[in-house]
Image 1: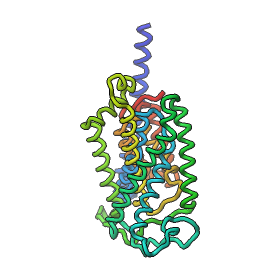
Image 2: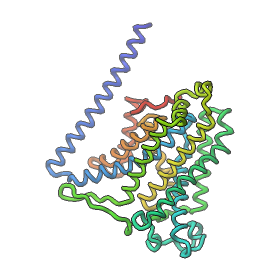
Image 3: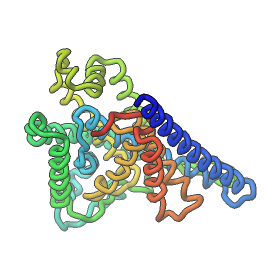
Image 4: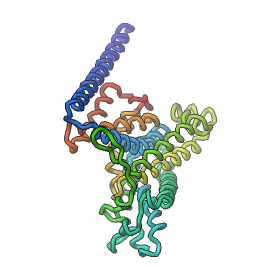
Length: 371
């Protein structure tokens, strides 16, 4: 029996090593091909630089949104399908606050809240952009964070908490789907289903960075997203590593039963998880809409698949894995455009996810093992 067990372990290791070798070989071939294209001029260096910058922006946005999802899974042990619609709620609440600051006296309250079929808000007339109205945008970010935190705490109080001690993760997962539908169509009822313009692109400052024979265009909305996302991620890292509550959260993620025995206040940890996860989710929703300039009632739901992919690639339940997975997705979705049409970018992303599941199912950062 011992020899059979040893043989099985050895076979699994060989299969994993073979898979890793194939992945590294494939990446090497693509890298050599890219260098060759740059040498012969088939692909211009400024295009590659633009793809890299866009990939970083997309990756940090997805990673920031994924951190809250990973925290929820690692401590509460269920996949929260309402996460995407919480992102949408954060985006809308932040921008309602921005319009409230900038639009008072120019639009009636019905139009200000984007309700009904009145005349649309002219964002150019309001002059809303991160360049021209930074304080209003900062206020919107704060409101988005606070609003999403209150929303997540309310959902936990009235939906998840009554079920948490009497049901398994499957029941909570199904409940989260119901919450997701309620949130999405509640937002559709309030804000209607059409896309909403939020920022005046003509007023947003942009910078041209020379690369090769051309240049890379970077606007202030993208810079804001990158800097704020990095700052929030560093803040989460410091909190989890050095604060007493952060250590309690990590202990509960490792072993909930042991945490209970040792006297860790689990309800306080759960509440902190929702607060931190909600804050990051609201910030992600606001920053993504700031960078895009538009929002619709289902944009968070559309992003949810990419967020789940990032969490799976990085390692389910790992905060750092969610960040790494988001960056991998961002670079994959943009760099792949060198070889495939834009319509197939998501195919490349989910192909990477499948490869990770095949050859490193625990993820890049070995997250919490799923049931």
